[in-house]
Amino acid sequence: MTTYDFNDGNGPVPAHQHPNGGGWVADTATVAVSAFVGPDAVVTGNALVTGNALVYGNALVYGNAEVYGNAQVYGNARVYGNARVFGNALVTRNAHVFDNAKVSDNARVSGNARVSDNARVYGNAQVYGNARVFDNAVVYGNAHVFDNAVVYGNARVFDNAVVYGNAHVFDNALVSKTPVRISRSDGYDFIIVPCVDNVDRIIAGCRYFTFEEADKHWNKEHKMYAETTIILRSLKNLYELQKSL
Image (cartoon, rainbow, N blue to C red):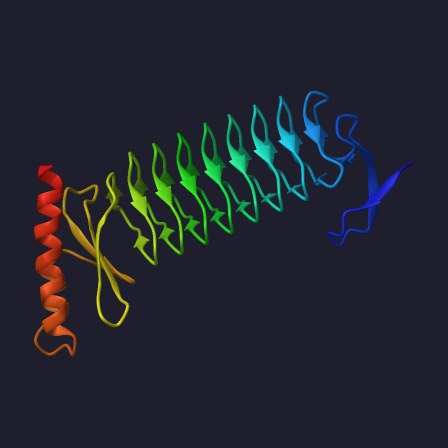
């Protein structure tokens, strides 16, 4: 019996080298003959790799993850848990897709990005840099999420929207265009987004306020009152202009 140590703490386990590429595959995993597993890539656990999927570079697919269709996982990428990567999706560089996350269609997850929980990334969407997409968030269409941006809760980022920098988009926010964003002098970012209840809200750090709530929070007693008031008014004006275009 041939064994291989996948360095996952389980020691040497029954395994074989995949005939198409030579990468190591645990006997508990399922890899179709039509799929490719490169010489430095591994598939272990109860993972499934089928169709014309490619796993190569130093990529790892493990747990109960599934990679299928024409999907590619390469570089130092990791796909694990109950994650699904399929269609023509790409997961590359140091990206991780895990938990119950799904990446499909022509979507791309790269850099140091993380897509997890029940999040979905599909269409032509891209998530990269140090971006995080998790909870029940969905990124699709031609949307881009990158830098240190975080999308979570039940948020939706779609169409041609671009979310970047240190922006946080969360709860029930809907972003279909690049959000209007203004930074305060202390580095605090303010953005305005529509939400599923048809109410526009201000997102600033962990704050998720209507305009009225924002005015009450950053009132005259607040040390940043003057600057924040200007930012809130400017945001509203710019947002109204964006909607009219």
